[in-house]
Length: 101
Image (tube, rainbow, N blue to C red; front, top):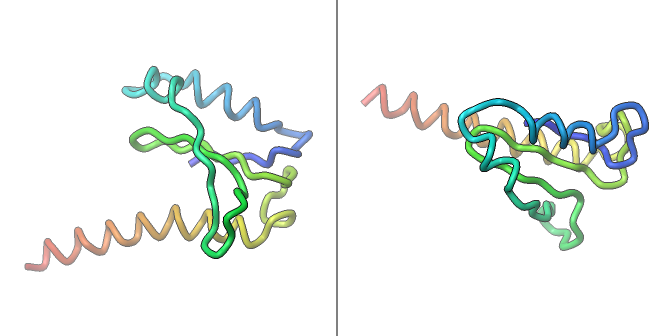
């Protein structure tokens, strides 16, 4: 996962978007052409960002956040980490459970 605040003047989100679009990997063409989707948090219909993802790569633009996304949007940053690590953790635990059978 690569994320950027849309108000970041140090490392602007367009730069993050550009290098993820140009990264050389198996799904690079598919990723470059992928569309953005709104990202909402539970209990809030208003989008807090937008993302695109293909296979193992996600690029997330966080709305109303600068260079320090967790300081500007703490709840959104926690939701981002919960999503990223939660999915990883769930998949990892399922793999472990299958191996124990």
